[in-house]
Image 1 (cartoon, rainbow, N blue to C red):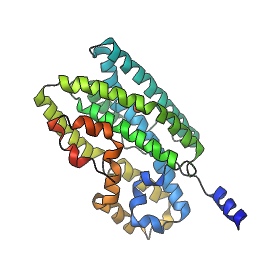
Image 2 (cartoon, rainbow, N blue to C red):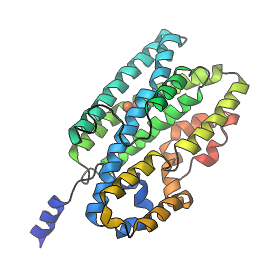
Image 3 (cartoon, rainbow, N blue to C red):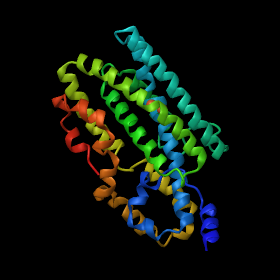
Length: 290
Ligand SMILES: [Fe+2]
Ligand SMILES: [Fe+2]
């Protein structure tokens, strides 16, 4: 029996992302799926997760960092911004390389296949990011994204025996750099948020809350595309489709799922720094504890 258990363990298909970082895992439907169906969803979501990281690094943050590398008030801060850009380019290159290894055909021309961001959205995001001096809310988004990246990376480590070693390797490397990025995000925010007039800080705080709730909470666009792609690959699920979709819709009321997204314990720096600014009190209810 021991040998059998061992063989079935070796045969078990490896995941691309820990299950608890995927929305479908939180739905009742997940328990009725076969192992093969789960792994297939997991792998698609795991690839989307890499696409999302590239998008954050290349479009949400980069132009803003380039602005900081030119206009930050001290040579020290400007150099920090330059190093930051170089590291993020390197990270995107690791993730891009892995995606191309997994699916050379699909990722030959573009990094984004599952992520719902066309050329227009990419260009718009870059434009917004270049205006970080008027939109310091983007630096908060960046800090939150990096604290979450650290949190996700630790989650990968806890599930190292279930996850494909290639995905583990890039997450391990990424994890090593993230604390340095959080340190720099804090440096930039402490300077730029304080330097922003109170009225503009209030506008930015409102924008930040809206962006977080609209784009970075429920799986509305890209997460939905992952689900659609997966359902397309599994015609045998057609009779369960309606139930799966209604479970998916119910994620907005699923407290276990919602509280897994922005736990305060995973975003300690965001929580601490935001508490110094009255315009960011919404963070008290936005950040949850598991
Ligand atoms: Fe990164
Ligand atoms: Fe980073």
